[in-house]
Structure formats: structure tokens, C-alpha cells
Image (tube, helix red, strand yellow):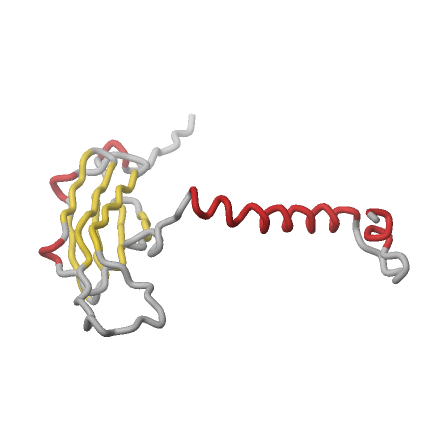
Length: 154
């Protein structure tokens, strides 16, 4: 049977021997999916909030999507090389008789901790929230900033 699948006989079209191994791997994944889904449940809403971390020579910039969350409902703290953002997403309750056709928005508390490559100056950190996007500016400590070194000639 393996010979027939790898040679394509009787269709005579060539397939790679690795195609059969790939098919068997997919079958095993499909068979074990039901078992592992019950044991290792992933969060329904995924990671929240979604974040981007960028940098320039002086600062790190953390941008987080937080639609519908007010700035005074957030708890932001910086220590050393770690930024922590936590809060609670509240969704207004639906009518008791409402029937959901799709429910993807979840309410509840959240917390994200981001490790930064170097320490930041927590005293100069700033945060602002506009249009559902939280922007945190984290200045690098002087020791972490790149230094220009002049090359001397003899």
C-alpha cells in the first residue's frame, strides 16, 4: 500500500515519499485533536491586549490595543526592565432573552507583562491613550543608550 501511494501506481503520477509521511502526521494530529482539546484548553479570546514594542536610540514604545477601556481603568507599572499593564474589560450585559449567533468578545480582568531588553528610566515614563490605543514611552537609561566612539588615527 505504501508502495502504491508513493509511486502513484496505477495513476503513474509521481509523488514524494515524504507526502505519505505528511499525510500520516496530519491524520495523527486529527485523531489526537479531540483528546488534547479537553486537557489543554486555550483562552477563548486569545492574548489581550495585542501589543507592539518598538525602539529608537532613546526610547522604547509600547502600543496596546484597548478599545472601550478608559485610561483611569488601567494599572501601568514599570520596574527595571519590565512593563506591566493590567485592567478589566467590561462589556454591557445583553438582554436575558438574547440568543447569541457568535460570541467572541469576552469580559474580564487582564494582565500583560512585557520584558524589555534593557532597563528603562521609570521616573520619566509616559503613557497616553487615544482612539483605543495606549502608547507607553519608556526612556532608556543612559548606560543602555548607544554611544558614538570616535576612531583615532596614528
